[in-house]
Image (cartoon, rainbow over all chains, first blue to last red; front, side, top):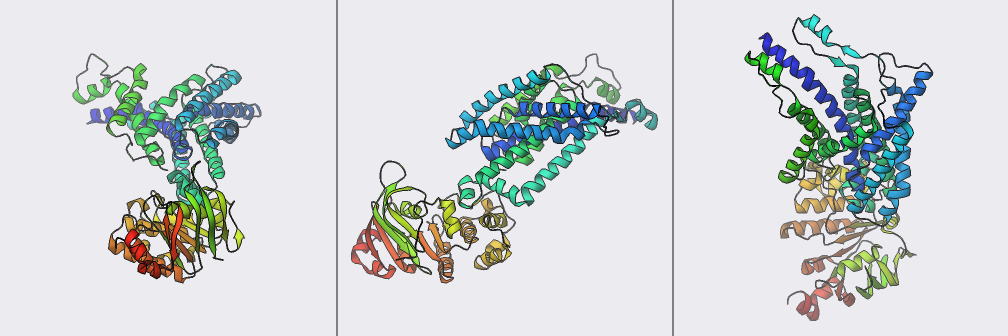
Length: 335
Length: 234
């Protein structure tokens, strides 16, 4: 019996908690992608770099606060700097919209044109971020490291295996829940949120109803900037901030949005967790679990794929979904 | 001078003209129906009065005011309502949200107007929480008309409101449309079901190739042997 519990603790510690954390980060990222797709009707490849940009500003804010001796106690100081990062990302998004996207919108450019434009902006923002903060790793986490460590857990339960919960993991999951709840409240209960859904659902009818498209676009970029910064900062706190890793995050984020049904916010969240759990479950070494359950120690690591192939998992899921159910789990296309 | 009138309208979507010197008008509390063969420019004529295509010649007057150069959204603010033939509801949004969006330009309390729409279309009250995309064709049309009514328009333009619904539902929709006209709204509609539509019409316009062929009361058009032979199937 204890063996089974030990096996479950191993799974919880190395699979469940990390996947929930990573899934929350992907979900917030995918929510931003899905909003742009739903309202502005294109796949925004620059989203990963927007995340990096917002995170960079958050890091500057964190450093500033730290140098002033401000801290959030046990919580990371970066949380206090988030509004600044969000502001930065929103300003950047609106600036790019005004200078670049607006021109194509007025010409009623095709979604493919927009997609290619967004790839260009992806390189631009990426270059800007690396130019300003450098391509290296930045660790901007502070505060308490663990809410409870593996050792605390072992001592408290008397089990052989430990379960740790890092502060960053708890912060990520709680923030994601709050942000998603606020987002759904906004989209479903407020007049502005409903007008965004209406615009996403049927642009012509929305115009006929007197919904101002410029305002919808403005609000969308504000939300996208906020979501990108929050997702990016949480990811950076949890792992570390490295500009290049945000470009690589783009694939799992798009996979999440598409698996859930692109344009559908609920789908983006579900997709985030599906991708995160699959990535981690497929690359997890089950040796310990098997040992506990069968009382026989396998020679290999019992790992389906090496962690280097993590990114391939998103790719495979993406391809399977596009072949079998192109609209995603929750049929997408509208908000 | 009619309450809403598009006079001598000539124009089209691109370079080729679809309308040729076409005149369409409607009075308050009246129902005007545009009928004619396929491709006669019926919908185009109505859309022209709503500013959805460029007129090379002619003008549109609403309540005595020249609105030829206003955008459709601006005409909504002036008191015009338009129900497109297709894609006329927000499919992913509930019936009630559709009505709320219809009243988007209003800043006052809209609950009275919603209640009014529910009185007119009781089935919508029952289905108010359901996404409009899940309703039947006839119910969807009711949502579409209800959405347009939310701004209390003085003129309501309906583009084939009975397209694709059963004859029973069609009769019911026509009854509702008569009821709306009795509230003092001017109704201009395009109809495929010419006979039934002319029966309820105060005024009928028969268009052929973008030009007026016959204009008369609905009754007179129904009695006119030329119209009967050419457009009503005998």
